[in-house]
Length: 356
Image (tube, rainbow, N blue to C red; front, side):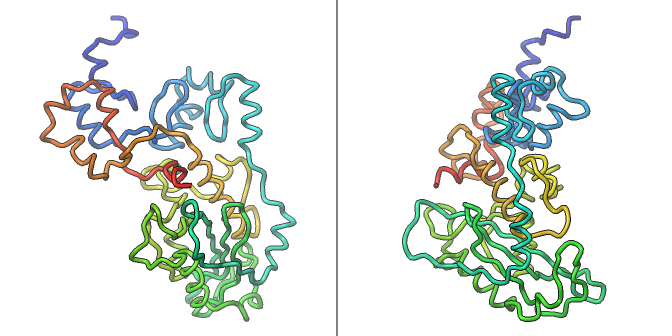
């Protein structure tokens, strides 16, 4: 039997997104019901396979067991940072030069390390084109008897142009038992007269909400700011700041940037793999982390995907796309038609660009 040719029945039961093969059409329908394939998934520029994350796409292209045809083309025309396929080796070289970011100037970081307070937090009364984007990062010292309790001792907020809006050392509410100097660079004297946590919390909370009451904050058409970070739940918890998840863009929890569906990549790895430079190599600066998360967000936001009126599987208009009562109808559809009605189960950051 010549395996180069697939029967029409086999092709009919094949997912056109991830290329998985099924014995029966009903199994393909069930797969589409639970896989949430969409135009927002990372897609191989060569064979057009949909991958759940950029890590999966990287494995497909250059992993230990790549698809050989895709690997060969990628090695000649593929960008190792954004994983795009270019028209020629020369186009790839030009693109990759632009795609790789340079690291933050070390002399600049040294000056920031001794910076006391920079406070440009303002609540705006006028309207803007869309939600403003800011990035936040903290550095933690240790509390408790063994020094393992994270206490925020330094916080930084930057705007979309990588300018510092707010930077301060933070005086924790309980005694510090481990300054973690090797990574934080923080000494006891830096915190002695630092801004109290409660004051920091209030300033950041008011700035993020930007004059909107918490219950009124919505992702579209409001004044509240989009907050970017890595491990935001933890940082905001340590700052005692409450903020709606719909306004947070967390590089540790964004499915295309995760290692697996439940395991995050470190910010250090993401920066090296997708931005092309190293961070957190010695004493760590929250400004450096802010810039890295902001750049990752901007790269994800700049992706161009097909526009859909209702892009999320959770949108009411898509509730019955794969309803069980439609089973017979779904089984009569082609794999292409099934993909056409399939929607994403996560909010793609490219949708933020349409509000800007």
